[in-house]
Amino acid sequence: IYIFTLGIFIVTGGLSVRGIKEVVRSPLVWSIVLGFLFVLLRVPLPRFLLQGLEFAGSAGPPLAAFTLGAALAQRRLKLSPHLAAGLLFRFAGGFLAGWFAAWLFHLEGLTRTVVIVASSLPSAVFSFVLPDRYGVNAEHAGTMVLLSTAAGVVMIPLAFSLAGLLP
Image (cartoon, rainbow, N blue to C red; front, side, top):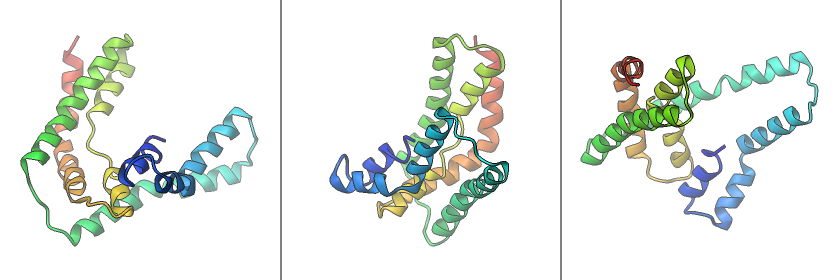
């Protein structure tokens, strides 16, 4: 919900009339709100409808990845010190934030490992797709997603190993 509310406000220039309109027009925000309401109000849905919605929803991440790939194919990747700092912050900062959260909430076992490793995952594809959709320069975000995903081959197993070593 943060991505499709706060994220939209950020890429549209802050809390503005345009930003509010874009959030209200976002079908993803409406689906999140309706999903919460259906669960809270215990609205029964037929099994076939749930299966159809789940099938349609599972197309989101691959379509976002395809969008990123198609957009990056038309652009040149630009490496910069900011990108290196972003990658370091993404992996090391994410790992430390996950470890701190696990320590703060006294998490143990598998839950602790999941929180730490999930905090260390590569940048989300939506960090490119959202700015690109609203006409904001997304070159750095696209390069960040691409490089962090490639680095994830090493960083994810490393995060698992380190999560098991830390107190």
